[in-house]
Image 1: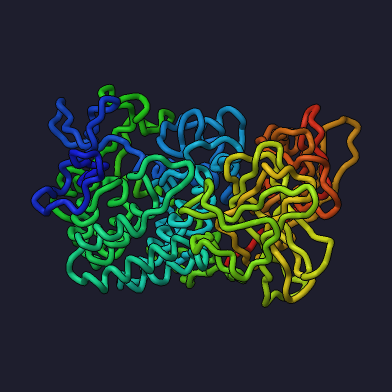
Image 2: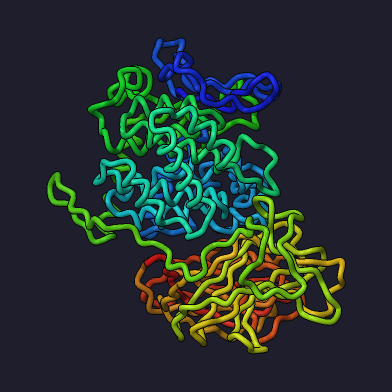
Length: 629
């Protein structure tokens, strides 16, 4: 209600580091005027009673929705269950911008295809807006559901954030959710930022943004405006599918961190700095304030906030479309009440926290909460994320490839292999320090030329045989992962374009990394005989009543995404998409889809109906994946 959103100079550039005289708490937001959307007021006086009312907005509408979803999860399953996110986005009829777009975002994919979370945040399965900042502006307050339990907060953030993105905005979401969780027990802002940043991948651009902000604070210890001005240039990163400079994650999240470091825990100063910093100021300020509000509690709430918003707990959020606002900018949930009392929203957060607390091993005695306070688990990175921005491939084995400036996923460079009729093209790294028998995951954003198939692969150094995950006919960058078991202490991991590929075709990867993971068996699964073509049935037993992942290894040679309809115990459940793998894969193919299901001790029958499509199910198991230690 105080931030400047996309304010511009006369030349069209973003206006940043605006003067203090422009700041007034709770008299905004101050949004860009456009011919499409000339009206952006969100804090409006009710003419009937003269009381201020807040109108719903994407900076908090999904945060509120998530609390209804958590309530419904525990009412239906007694635990967190991904299916309820899908069901409730449709049930509560979500209008949201960015990755939640009504047609080509989360809502549209939930509604049209019945996809589960994770799939709806992916470019590969249709989300055209998943580079936007929706994850960290719409889900970060899940950290309030897990005070002092940052691992739980991050797990919730990963699940709910996967609804709108599978990219860097989700990594920043994990960091901010962890900060909110830890802020209940940590009052030093720099310490909090440093601790939470450990959840980010080693070598990642997001880690670089955090380090840059600390360097700026050292360089300009009292001048946040100079820090903002420099951060706008140095924290910006190009994305191949993002034309809107002012929506860029690196800039916006650097501004959040700058306001935290320069505000140093003060509610008013943090709000002022983040509001005036620029770019998505009305979206970034709530993230920063969520963190310092936990540190401050109610004792330092500015009078203007209480007068216009909280109103001693009687404040109201109007959850309906404003007739003066263009329909493309509507942000509300038509299936929720038209008026939401703020004290009721707080109580919903508290009730959900209590359920999560007890499930996490804590307890409630009278008015006291006993919280199993823990430190943040972090990735065990064995090959730090490489975005190839050095422009070199030093240390890689390269055959027919190069560091290329042609259409990178992010930044200015990716690693690209051109086709050859005679030899395999390879860009691979020797990854050492592995433990034989343990499991690792290689991940990259990968794109191919039309009608081209390549592989993310792993093998022993010098061996001819390898295991792989396929990337086939993907002109847009998709996130691809290969989970493999180390058979040697050092293995060769990377990208391969097989011989026989025409020279005008290519495959590229960006943001390549390898981390240790554990896939722990969570229940037993047996495949049942099926007399119907295209149907695959499994019986799952021995679960613990919580959600696990049905890992289905497959081959999809039909040339399109196969949408498998899922039933659980005969009841319609969801749809899982299986990406195309080109021609039928060999026994070395490790393409897998992970389907979240709640597994009880008794027998549960799960059926995948692929219709007439030629999907081959090669193996199935029920696992939980641990990727932080």
